[in-house]
Length: 127
Image 1 (cartoon, helix red, strand yellow):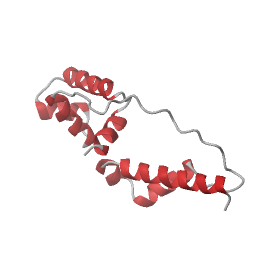
Image 2 (tube, one colour):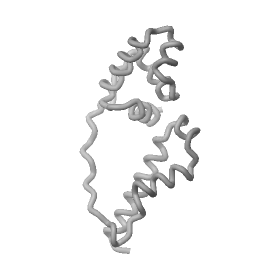
Image 3 (cartoon, helix red, strand yellow):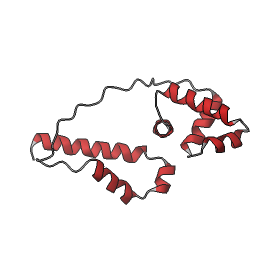
Image 4 (cartoon, rainbow, N blue to C red):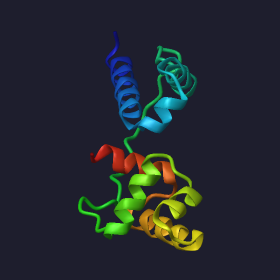
């Protein structure tokens, strides 16, 4: 096997493993392993000599190793990771919906991510 193709296959396997590890319990309940594999194959077909492309690794993320979340933000992040909606989080902690939205926005900013899924993946990867 050509070195370039071997590198693509290795990259494919690394991405596949990273995605598998990043899938939270909530997503795992929704999709079966076969569903996830099918999705991965649709997104990243197995490399062949015809479809090999050069891939430049992305720049390192700007998320610091030690993110400072408040105790409440940690609690809310746990609920986000569990798949709770803002309304469910508000009920659980007896907070207003506006307060929960503010906490979620602060969490996303502090983690340097742009979505709840990314925040949940960040939390899942560190625990």
